[in-house]
Length: 293
Image (tube, rainbow, N blue to C red):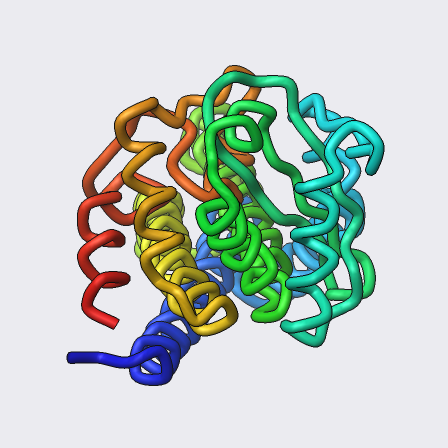
């Protein structure tokens, strides 16, 4: 039977492999784009890398405010949600992380998420449905899960992964459009690289969006397993988190204002997709793993 530490080490290793894979696909997409659009892999790659770095940086620093705004989050006042605020305060001390800003989302579906590029700038948000539905142990389990995301820098990793996948989609779209607009291909139409290089670039930019998205989704699932293990370790009571997941499974976790871009941040999948295209592992599997700890 795996313990907290075994699960944490396993999921961290898998996460590092997957984020490296997303980064590798991103570099390949930049190179493929330079072959198609500029006709070579030198100057075009340098310009593409410069644009890519700027895009990822802007997305990274603006993501938190955008996510909270899009989700309809509002600050959780202690006089209105004393139990929630006290729970997060106590667990933050136990986890050794700064107290995050606490928000609520007016939605009957039970769910929660954490955002923040660092523990010093983190925020947690809970739906009103979750706050009203969970007992003390269950709420502590969910809050501990979200604080584990903050401690493990999962929000930072997820933001970078989402930015890179979005960048790959943009490069792929621009590269394909240049092929159609340029007739014989964007780069070759201007006397650039050979047809073979352009074909290689075209293959890369067609396959890169699918490969990067699958890797990002797999990364998201691994970080959920990691946060489950971290949350169980923090409370020393895996059953609280497992019970919360059971309640969420029975009630449904679809949040009205959740989007494809924010879905991976939530405690449980706020959309309806499943399988290899899901941002989260199956709830039954998460419950089983927690009860095996």
